[in-house]
Image (cartoon, rainbow, N blue to C red; front, side, top):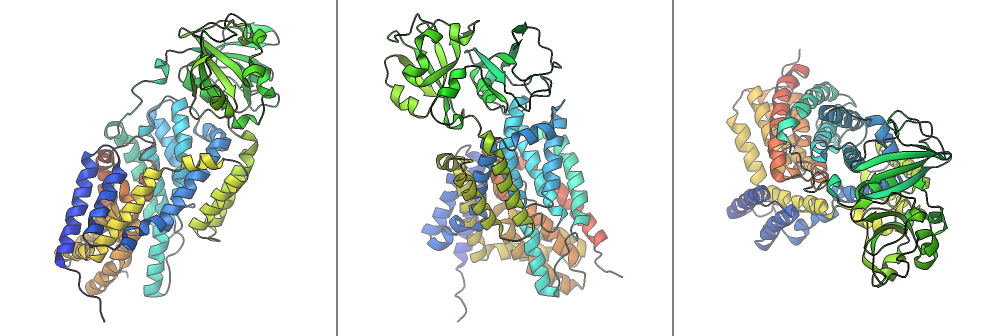
Length: 597
């Protein structure tokens, strides 16, 4: 028996819920995942979709892949495997436009040969750190990078899963799939023109969001001594080349080289192994300094603490009147053996203390920056010797010794996906398990690395998409729009692109392509024209959803890290959607004529 027709009221309710969800995302500035989930719950309660349909996004391959890639990306960041490469490739930009261009070109080209989801997952933390070092607003960088990666994915068959899906649909119709570089003729012009738009439009259309209190506003000034390790990659490089001149809120005061103090440090001065570098700066910059490969705190006692250094944290503690070492120097107090922590910097009344760490006489009210094992907080949090014992967030030194392991796992994952040896979801899950098993990242760090808000957004979007398909709302919109275009193939091409673009903004890109493909093929047969312009149009439109966070799964991956709002996507991505549409409608029939000779 054929399935019973869906009641008309369900289609109207679905349309109302989708509209209300979009309005909610525009109005509500926080918790966009809850807005999306609320829409799914309404449809579930009304009986439009079943529980299995509402929850199908939780087991979707795309969502699971993104979750696994968050872990892999965090491991790459935790070991510092990508930071050095990014710093050298991106360098020191002289302008925002230069910075944007550098962050777009490499990832965009790479995404033509590697699925764009892992490219974005890896670049987000790397660009975030790089932007901080170069005093750039990350909100000006992540969205252009993401959009460039999506456009780069149109330059080959394997650049995005949508291309592969459409190729399979074409093979089912004509017995032959798309070629590896069939779409390249259209993808490359779109990528180049899109790059120009991204650089030019971002000046006015993207927000410059920075923390309300900048790094330099921190009242606590620490003095920190660091030593250039023997065999350090910094040896032989200048201060500028080593990236030690651009840390926000940090100043290299002097260099102690074999007992000779160099006070006026020029950016071009070369570093040597054994140099003692004296920095003055605020806490956030001190934390960043701890992550530079080849530098270590000057206190030799750091290396007599129990456990590997990568598992230690930085802790701030204020000396209380009850502390028995108040009035004694740090060296004479035997601080390490008493508390199991090492003092690496001291701040007093917000000012730096001008002497070596061991010679500082502790006073009540001094803020100590300590390096300690994870158990220190539990032992000393209620100790009357200290006030306000608190861990400094994300202060663990990188596991540099495991960088090659994380890099090898990443390379194996990319190779497996590029050669289609295993599905993307399998490769990402195996890679995530491997980085945890090899201790490139701890299990706790892996859990914290997952952006749960982004995953819930992705999962909920599948419930809304299923309701649009099940009630016939999507097919009704598609048929009505294309019928209104008449018999003109150019108008039909534009209408088909518009419908696919609308669908991909509200549902998964693959679902949008699958839904509109049979309409495109049948329309081409009815008009007696070559179906390839229409096929390529829906392929591009299904991937190029720039105007909403749900338009593409990588859009959601930059939502939180970039500090974006729903309106940012509409304002910046909307014109890009229209630009790509116009170019596709013009170029597709020129590359694949409607009436080939």
